[in-house]
Length: 326
Ligand code: DGY
Image 1: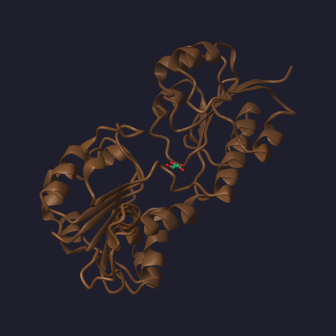
Image 2 (image 1 turned 90 degrees about the vertical axis):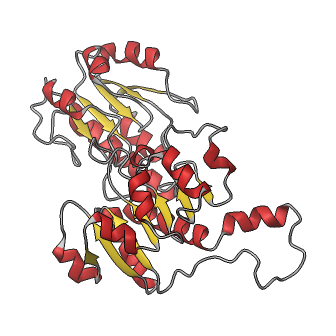
């Protein structure tokens, strides 16, 4: 009998081609994620689940899934999954590291540049009919070349961001709980404590996973240490930034701008005060959204799913220590 799997959103054909011949698979076809109650009822007889970052995979859900062997998340982040609970229950968890690094860094740098040079504001200005003439002081932004980039987090994506910044002749500083002297040499970047990084940076870019330690890491206190001309970019997870504190800092001129690909919650509420600010760009969590990368993420997630169903070690496991249930 083929293993029973549920895929919580439509995937690119390449990934479906891996799953469909060997699984009794149901693919959720809606744009919005499957409602919690439905997911809870579906998992009852599942062997495998392919989830997205919008699906909450917690202990309650796992307890409703006595046969579940593998949860394969189609994302590098896995803060939507209670991994210790999965490990305890013998459920393998997979994610999609590596394949989205460059695409995500491309977008983080795009946001940095768009905020620095007021691209989104400029577009709104044109469409509103405000472009009357070439003006010497119209929509003045900040130079990127020669500026200092402060990275919070030097994982794969942070390092890829540093490479881009070097191409723009930026000085790059970083803070990470794990110092990477190898990368400091390779990339020509410097390590400092968090306070020094944010005090000296013209641009601060956040590249940390969401954990108890990083929740609201960017708070009123940290924002108050940044330069008045600083711009913050967040492509990590929304809750890493205290959004109310960010709004106040942008409104009061404590910092100059922000560009966010992630918010808390997602989607951001249409009446969120951040959306009233000219100096804040909000993108709908699309940093990894290139055709090639999303296809790679989905095929990688499919490969993790299939390995887990076979009782094999996942190609990219989150909990490699798991003793998988039969
Ligand atoms: C991830 O993979 O965690 C990103 O947020 C979406 O690509």
